[in-house]
Amino acid sequence: MTAGQSGTGGPGRRSLLGAAVLGAGGAAFGLGGTARAAERTSGATASTTAAAAAGGSGIGSLPVPTVVAHRGASGYRPEHTLGSYQLALDMGAHVIEQDLVPTKDGHLVCRHENDITGTTDVADHPEFASRKTTKSVDGVSLTGWFTEDFTLAELQTLRAKERIPKNREENTLYNGRWAVPTFEEVLRWAESEGRKRGRPVWLHIETKHPTYFRKLGLGLEEPLAKLLRKYGRHEKNSPNFVQSFEPSSMERMSKLIAAPRVVLLSNASSRPWDFVEAGDPRTVADLIKPEGLKWIASYAQGIGPTLDLVIPRDTEGRLTEPTTLVRDAHAENLVLHPYTMRNENTFLPVDYRKGTDPNAYGDVFGALKAYFATGIDGIFSDNPDTALLAAADFARG
Image (cartoon, rainbow, N blue to C red; front, side, top):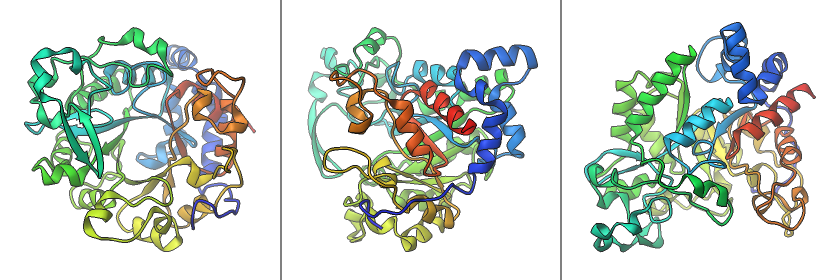
């Protein structure tokens, strides 16, 4: 199946469960403040209620649709900072995402990319001016500063900043407030916050450019597995996913830990970089066919497709008809957490934009309703509070 194929996917295999969970506690899922008020009065957060309603632990304990805070609450704070993660958790996000890249001395840190030019103040540090360089990362030429050229001690002298200031000028208020967190810091934070809330804090952990880093002697999977084992997050029902755009990374992780694994899928015509390196001719279009999904299901429990693989856009950028991806993935018992919803017009389908300001908020609730109607199990969002309200609306019908 390619992204252009049509066919309406029916409700997901967990949709009825999710409707029951969210229907019972829908209002609490919508606003962080409401959830905290419920906690004060009943001694349980909305997510605790959801887990109890779903029964047990592991993936089945998550409400459907699951709201994954993309790089934290990155619509409101610089991404991949403890401030962004904390805000997402306080808003009530069900899962919080981290992207992992290594330092020169092998520590895993949370950055969307190893190129930190746009997400830190490294350019303002004259002592690191000579580190600026040009590299080819997964076939793309990039000029800037890269985590693998810094020790952890050096990297921690930098401060994080907003990645897309032209779109999110208000977020620049928080430039310089937080450092680049190590993944172990995030694990300690999640452990502490979990104790406070009486429930585990779910994480969605991505290995970035694993083939590239393995060639540098900085493989990601083994250090990640070691940390997950250290914090007891390596079991089948552990409250985290691990994910990658490179299927071989998840195959490798399947031999190291039992925690659920997710293969991320970019546009249909693209090839995962590990496929390029290995001479594997398959594209994402091949992987979303039933036989490709069956292969993914042999070592993973979910997929994270771009939203355009769920509902393609036409040449003008409007949504068309859903593909059969949801139905086909559910047939292989794979959960779907597509990416990424953002509130600003510039990121929305054309038919859900409002006005002419590309950075103004559009009809996000309408767009989320359309995506939820396909039966997806969850969604990545930069604005978890918005997605939570939309999920509650959808569950109420």
